[in-house]
Length: 329
Ligand code: PBG
Ligand code: ZN
Image (cartoon, rainbow, N blue to C red; front, top):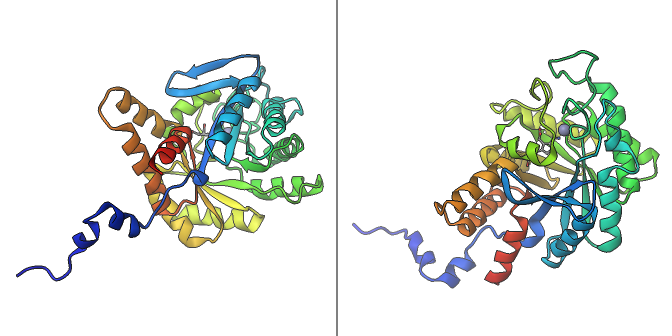
């Protein structure tokens, strides 16, 4: 007996495969993360993230131009301040690193969409994403006082020119607080991309080298989600939608493909996936050892995020992917 149904018929020729391809990755899907540090002419490679650099504002501007010329529509900015304090002053100050970087980038490359990461962990000495009770060594961030700081941070980022605000601290009610702050300050048209389902993940390790934001004690499990939970992600996104989020993010991406899929099924808002630092580091390490084909692994992974339901992908591979996509066409 020969098979009647022969899926291989449609795989016989490259053009035929192109015609029936269900998921196409494009440069428009990519968002490139950048880390702004104080100083001038600084480009310091992150130990655990080959090819990723902490950059001073002048270098951020150069990088932004390159990103734009590659056809990538957007960057997300993280800031590493000169000084840290318990009020996270560097986060909400008008001369903060993200604020300065946003202003400089928008002046040099007005059509590049600048997303500001809105969190406090880079700016506090203890490395937690908000206020702690004095003397607390467990890392139980105080929710509501932290909202006030996030609000202030978002408003100053919008004032500095940020096009999209991305609150990432996983505080309850943070989308509502940020929305209210933006509206009160007249930024009714500034969208919020919420880190809606963000897990307490070991895959953030290299990022904490890059952003110098590792918690000095305790961990983030009282605010970030338990990796075993998927239905809870739907609860989180429902709340964020009700609070006014315009886009939703799932983070990390690779071990949370099912969550990306479920979130996409549950909402019609754009869904972003954050291909995080540890995912990048693993691919880079294997590639540098000659153990995998970096281009093919990266393109397969990014395409898979789209297949799972992501409309947008935040990734440290964005510049490489844009070059590879350009070479294909
Ligand atoms: C914290 C924050 C984290 C990342 C971005 N913002 C994680 C964390 O330290 O808890 C991770 C990004 C990455 O790993 O690439 N607000
Ligand atoms: Zn944080």
